[in-house]
Image (cartoon, rainbow, N blue to C red):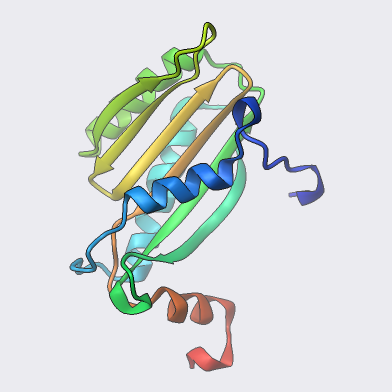
Length: 171
């Protein structure tokens, strides 16, 4: 993917990075999970990719699955955050939200729809549970996005990032 052409500007002037950070802040887990990091990563990859397939169209990776700490300390466990973007979608936003809602409910994710108060509203759906700590699908006629945060897994986010990067300190 040509990262030079990738826009980090979200819908209507909002940037996606702060929105993703807000999702992470709102979803801190307590570190009591008994999920292995690789299983958490595979699970969030699967549900985010399946969500994109359900909506259809050409999606691009905004952020590869990244290990983040679940709690206050690095050893409190880790989650993976994975973000996909779809610029200029052809699907109707409200219909896309309905399809995502059905998929997520089938996966055991509790859902809640939302919409902005604008005359031309942005619609979306949030989810919790099942294979994810949280999910968010935002739909606007100009851009769709999916943010998935995995279940909290055992381990340290710092050590997991070092391991994934092949850093000698992780060996």
